Image (tube, rainbow, N blue to C red):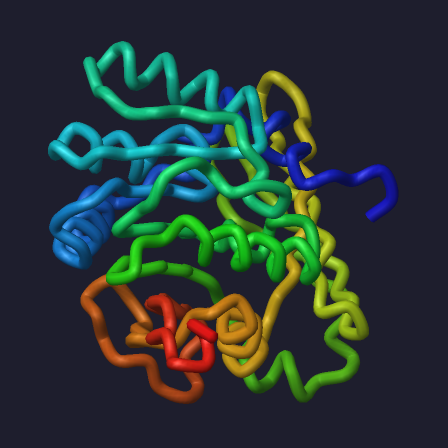
Length: 258
């Protein structure tokens, strides 16, 4: 997508993100319960924290949270919400593909398909390398993504689509999508029609297969702990498209210490 950069989406949508992407309270509660129990101690790093949908409740629950994002406007909204709720957490403008945050973390989360929106497959590789340098030895990395369906993978004619996301009396939301199979990339334009006008929110998704994801993680020093299809911790099975993958650092060997 010519002229696109990874921060553009957050910069454009920050002021309306919470309204357009509200999540059922029960789902958020499940996410928070699972994440809180994955690692009882140590700091929490949320990559792509955005407006704080997960970072804020974790901080309010007493977790030591470090929220990072590449969008100044998204973080500005997060800061306002944190102040309003008297939540204490560290908020930092940081591109995980370019640098690792200081310190060590017992839990690192990269949720809501953020991993696919880091800017490209090279950026994903560099991000994992940076995360491996700041996760504690017993820490857990949680990455939430999606998979193409078998039909989409096998259908070579699937190169573009237009989805109707929502129709309300005062709002219509569409997504125009171009598929670049060679680069494993979706160019996405979310189009929001409201009584106040039309707004465009472009973003890219650099998707992976499970094998590609695990290979990237292995190269960065991670091994797979578990894989679920939802926040009920339902074991992942072939044919499902929602994926929550848990990784930890691979045990060091004698060769590593030589």
